[in-house]
Length: 124
Image (cartoon, rainbow, N blue to C red; front, side, top):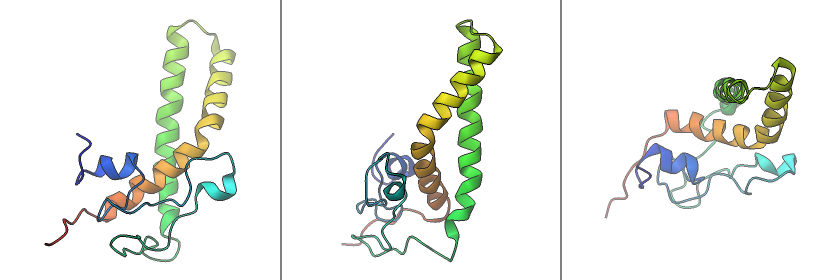
């Protein structure tokens, strides 16, 4: 399932969507939000330009919104099943969303670029 050539491999392992060898983000997930979204300009392996056009990653906001809503619904359902009342459920949703914001922002960019760039095997 997570083999090279699969989009999930690129998304979960922070790899270039085209060659799946070079890294996409310069730094790992950190609490320093300044460094959290720093992307290389080009892939260090195949040379793919990550910023395909100016403001390309603005579209990742829609992916981020979808991930946030899905996570909030999941937390609400889990909190309902374990018996929390409404206010406690909303507090749980708020805490989880704040904690996962750096990860959601990174995942949304990786998912978004993988929608437009496809894997190409190296020609030997």
